[in-house]
Length: 527
Image (cartoon, rainbow, N blue to C red; front, side):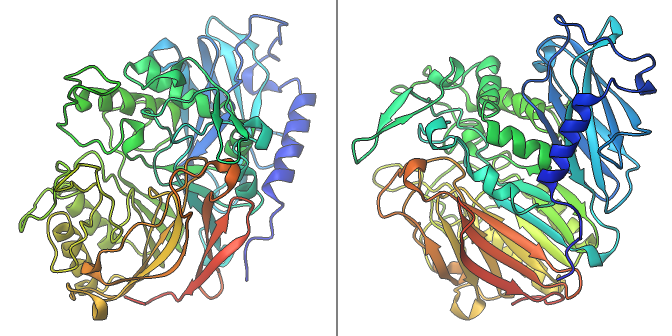
């Protein structure tokens, strides 16, 4: 292995915090800011970095009042000779959040940053700086790449339980010193109220941190913003955000369970009858754009979520949006379906970007799995939420679009593809092979599932045989909605060796224990 011989991110951050506490902030801001005892902006929600590439990245913060965001970066934790980045004014129109784009960064280097919030009317009055760190992608293969992924946070009523360490899975992920974290969706559960307590099967009581916005389903923009703030109450998540940059996508629970464009809610739900999901989605998307640093979206909720994040010569991450452009959930048995789960335009975008990619590995980050059956809960003739509908025959409905994509990848001889996802609240590894499939015009590939991060765990989903999946590993509970206190919380790790180019996937439990390992070889169309 030739993974970078850099200091651990946690020790680097500790040094940054200690150095920052002793600084009076040098002249990048002019005269030293006056740290007034009161009335200065605060950044109690921590910092985040996102969509980091070889020469760029985004830094996020939230203030407690109107403030100017200023970012300083340095190659060292002492912040000698820092580079200064003027950020936006933070105000009520963005819930006092803001993102600053950093460009022209050196590749393959540890970047130390600190965020200062200054009084908009007096830049000498600044709050205490908040520090973070990230590594830019390497320009050469030898440095290697390591990242972690998962999804599903604070679902099914299981929120921050400080008696079990809160969102402790983030501490386990941080110990691996990853280059970034890929969150596969369901960052919040806007449709999932969190009560102060819940009784576990053994009679113990699960105790949640609660807030007003999490006491009911999210309807207003303030409700959605409050859902994102809720997660940032967790100390482990704030520590992680300051140490590991993220690549974030969304799925249904950022709005409502199993939602699709054009859906209208009837009576008998917590929502007012006649609620248009498109209206809720607009509010959710705005809050999402405010609370995550996303290169195509930050500061503009009309931007798109699907994108490619280039992480040096070894890796491109193709972040899909399987929610915004999908057709309605249905029995999914149509023989034609041009819209599918991606929409025609996103499908063409994905084909084009895969063709352009020169990275050794092409990770397709999907909101939902391909061959796992996810029903929509309708009685009688059920609707389906993901791609598969349980018919093992020729592609139908949304499977038609995936078949078109897989055929394209085969005939263009696109190498190094694998799929990562979450959504189903258990962990598994599926190998897809045309020799087992009803549809045969594709090359073999792997799909790995992880999650939840902190939500109810559920039994393994049924498989659909259309693309020939073989589930070679699964760990899932035998009953539904197992709490985080009882285990079954998972994340995955991907480690690409800089010398050999081999990619190793490890499925891990919440404490970091390895459950399953698979190593793939570079340069192959299928394996």
